[in-house]
Image (cartoon, rainbow, N blue to C red):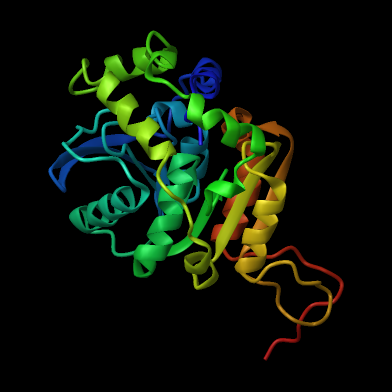
Length: 291
């Protein structure tokens, strides 16, 4: 989940500053924080959640592209970007609760969600903890259990240390936007601690009714078998062309794509996300009969 110096530095280095479609920035008080967010576009609301060490800008062009067809509300979570930090660990359930409270604060009753990396785990926890607030969720690079990460990544987690992040592009971006430019070391400590928190959400995923689009690269930090297992937990893996509607959840594996390359695949992401959020299914030869 973009939580090593190598991965994060690569993403920051490759993320251009893209002009969004006239985003409007604002702040709102949520759970003791001043949360920053930007709204762009018109239509059905879509909450966009960034990855660890990221902010709205480093999500790149996908925000402005998705804003062509819906109202995109991009949020900066605890301690990230222009959102203030608080004296509290960073955990996926707490971040999900923050986003749910944020929606209440700005008057959005229910929305679709697109999350990347850490933001994907937050989006999954939103669907688990606040299903009444999530219509559909597109989650890029997501695992529901620590065992779902690629073996190389799991082996690397114990080696992650704060000094790997100091003096990197992530620190530069943090200092440029943060309310407390000296708060980066504290954020790093919290995000390293996040790596070691247990993830064992299989039963919660199996109980979900929210349609989920799982997106990963074929060279991602998520194990392919884990993504397929998640898809099956959500009702996927059936054979089509038998006169029955396909499951609402979907699985997409992007070819030739590493973890940090996912967000650069703007048009491919759009082509996957928009039809999913609209509930559109590609037409096959054998369509179910209308009732």
